Image (cartoon, rainbow, N blue to C red):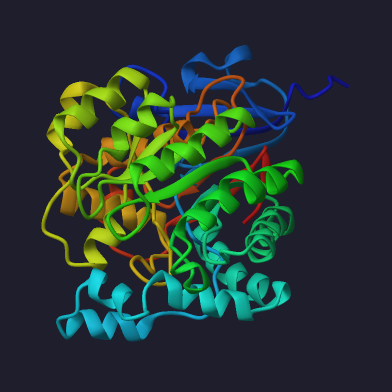
Amino acid sequence: MTEPRWDVLLTRATLATFAVDAPFGQIRDGALAMRGGHIAWVGAMDDLPHGGAAPAREVIDLDGRLVTPALIDCHTHLVFGGHRAHEFDLRLNGASYAQIAAAGGGIVSTVAATRAAAEASLLASAMPRAQALLADGVTTLEIKSGYGLTLEDERKMLRVARRIGSMLGVTVRTSFLGLHALPPEYADRRGEYVAAVCDTWLPALAGEGLVDAVDAFCEGIGFTPAETQRLFDRARALGLPVKLHAEQLSDQGGAALVARYGGLSADHLEYLDAAGVAAMAAAGTVAVLLPGAFYALRETRLPPIDALRAAGVPMAVATDCNPGTSPLLSLRLAAGMACTLFRLTPEEALRGVTAHAARALGLSDRGTLAVGQRADLAVWNVSDPAELCYWIGGTLLRQRYVAGRAQL
């Protein structure tokens, strides 16, 4: 008996590959084969080897359903204690994000709840959030620390992030966000805190294998460019890539700063200027757009989409899932919001949650449907790629594959 050439063969599919020169990289009446956790063949049905009779252990007729790369959420704060629904109420009653933070709310309130929570409790609360993202087609996600703000509590958060990945069988990339907010006990010792984060905490956590990248909140209510640069110097010495919360509430020159370090991404970017756009374009730094935070904070200043587009800066889209400013649990909805609020095209938004999101995490083995790529796929109960952005809410996912194995 002939040994099957492939593990799984998907036939009669609409493929949005994002890897060929066509809108959405689309192949109509296409087929895709998987073997050993990778994509082994992709193309039109008419081009299948052996006249379409190539042997596979399992052949699945999709009857025109859409197949895309599995979605990638490249910016989340998924692990945290408590919630901040009361701040949602405060904002609707006129308080600004900065005013809430100055009154002891904001990030610092989540820090208190996260410190008080045991590791098992943080895991139990984070798992449903992660599962909600997966139910919407995600198989790779980034999770930041930054709500512990002590060495042990940052370690606790990063351990939970690693456990989420292993328990759910998906890829979790961790980002150390020690420069997220100044904890109350360091209110009069800012320099000591920055030194501890850069010189003690980051080397310790990196040495334990808990850190994949280094992030900071470079903002008037966060940390200065000089403090951020000190952290990035330490990250570079440790061989870790950097990314940055930049230009969300004001222009601090953060995007240009992270670009000088060859950073993976600059995220938010509502106040990004022309110099920042040029620096990102030159460095290949990805712009990560976060429409959930824009929506929740009722912002009115848009990121400079036309300038980013004209400069050829790749634009990713992410949920920014967090308890205060983006309690968003659907990356597909984030893509739709990027279209409606930021005027991305559906193709730009979907590339933003696949190919460009992979790039924002430094991953070159996923995000497109191409031979040799990891077989992380999403099969949808629609036939037109634009429908993934068009439908607001609802359940569209039919099947999720992680390294060639069905998960749903």
